[in-house]
Amino acid sequence: MSAMAAARLGFRTNILTDDEGGPAAQVATATTLGAHDDPAALRRFAEAVDVVTFEFENVSADGLELLASLRPVRPSGAVLRTSQDRLAEKAFLEGAGVPVAPYRAVHDRAELDTAADALGFPFVLKTTRLGYDGKGQRLLRDAGELDAAFDALAPHPLVAEGFVDFDCELSVMVARGLDGTVRCFDPVRNIHRHHILDLTLAPAPVGEAACDEAVALATRVAESLDLVGLMGVEFFLDRKGRLLVNEIAPRPHNSGHWTMDACPVDQFEMHVRAVTGLPLPPAIRHSDAVMRNLVGPEDMALWPQILATPGLLPHLYGKAEARPGRKMGHVNRLFPKGGLPGAFGVRDALGVLARADE
Image 1 (cartoon, rainbow, N blue to C red):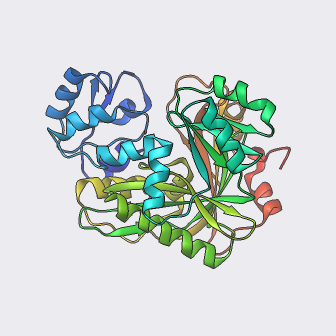
Image 2 (image 1 turned 90 degrees about the horizontal axis):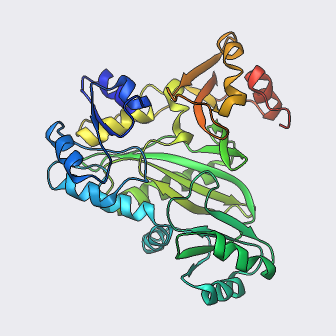
């Protein structure tokens, strides 16, 4: 999707991948086959491009440093390293004056006991690296679960996070250009199913004060990181109305896919503009929107009905196999600006994509 946005702006793209038929390779101008931690492949790739960006955090930060010695890399390897490690991320956020849930580092079994005493039950134990879509974490309700969780989660160290009296999750897509211009798309509400993002409501149906604070905090994070590019900032909104930053993702983000149909300039074009030094236009929306992910073979079985339903705007990613739990695409549904309906209206508007348990 970033490659297609780049093409609209007149750029040619080259994708470094070890999957010759992967989604990005299907639409890019050229492909460099190789691993993201292979120095020879990285050097071949650098020779073919003018600027480097990435769309997935689980790539080699060392590889990005090598690329940065040859070409501009945006966002920087330092931003990637911060986002790749939950302990580094939380320490950075605290240093930037951004609120986060209480947490403790867990290097060994004794520190897990110390964390449990400090945080109280329940709390969440997470890996510091490589976790996403609910992977690499456990909710611990009592001391009897500590041993099994510590042994099951790897690599160490881990991070223990205090349980948040959760109302909902919000996120903000924020872009920052080479000249320091910051643009924030409207905050959205995210609803998960089986730990995978299922539904995004744009704009977030919460109070104006919470939305304004989310934008201000996202801007602070982007400026403190010296970000050049696009970043998703995920928040917990607790039942007392407090916002806590959960994590950052320096790339186009699933919760920003609604912008593809509801905004004149979507998150992918904003990302490409930022990393190539083009001006950043205002991040405005002309419509309210609902985004629903298409996950696994169950949702893909509905593809004929989706295509036959007026008002559903489908986007497929070109993945070859619809495995359980795998995001295969998404569908957007637009509403007049200011006309986002309530839960029953959203369910009705999604038609064949409405969940039985909603």
